Length: 354
Image (cartoon, rainbow, N blue to C red; front, side):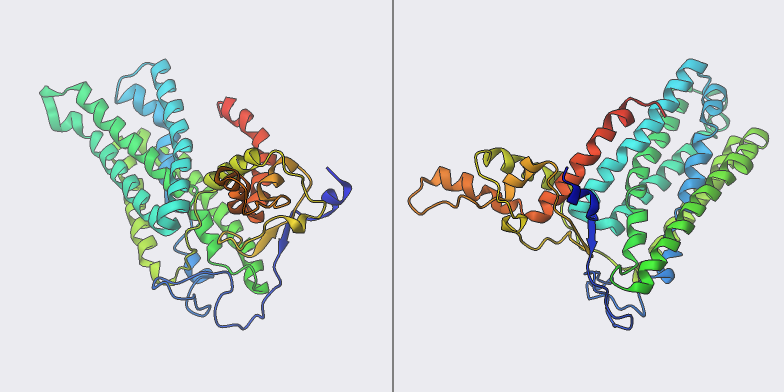
């Protein structure tokens, strides 16, 4: 990496707008798909509906004491219970890949959260009902039915968390216009409160709700977070008119894949010395910043190189190969380099049990 790449900031923010402009300048729209008005959408008026407090209360109310529930109510061995908990938690942190893909490619963040929150609440309800199965079935109690019902609820919760974890914080960030100097500072305060609400929810679950589960009963101990989640869904939907929405920009993984394919096809092109010679086109995902070019992972730059332009007399197949770099425009090259720079962090995550 060149010295100039080290000294140059990775992200170059666009010029700030005047504070008293009427509309946002980051492309956000309101519920009617019209440009978002600052005075009636976003900012703190929207963020009070978005904090992830209720989800953390529900998730940790299950996770903190799940081994006890499995070994007690479901009569599993300690080994089986530990395996079940590890598998369930792993599933809960894998499903955000699905939720993030659907949000970026099809549904947008708001509808992804609404749909997955509904799945989450359904799972919590089923899990709560499962605690009453021995009482309801009486002498005809079947442990198999009890286990199937409990596991159905657990994995619906794991699936539901997949649309909440990757989208709620991003939706909160969407409520602040990064080109506005005041809102840009306020966004930092939002994430402070967001992190604080997560920790308070976890603390409440690990203390009060665990005590309720152990001393009063699992039915009450799971009914409380179920009510929390149902209330959270209602509150979240109630705030839809004051949210700011960003338009769907497509899957980041698809864009990175396109860059890799274009770079391979253009392997024999000569890279220009000046990065400005690379193919540049506006991207809907640029937002309020542009990622700076670097010399790192220069092989990706071939995807946007137009050093050798196809002539009119070239065969059609050759033209297709030469022009394949057109879709790998500069914004995609930059984001692909950032993605590759982070990828060495993947193996430790995949091999760690925590």
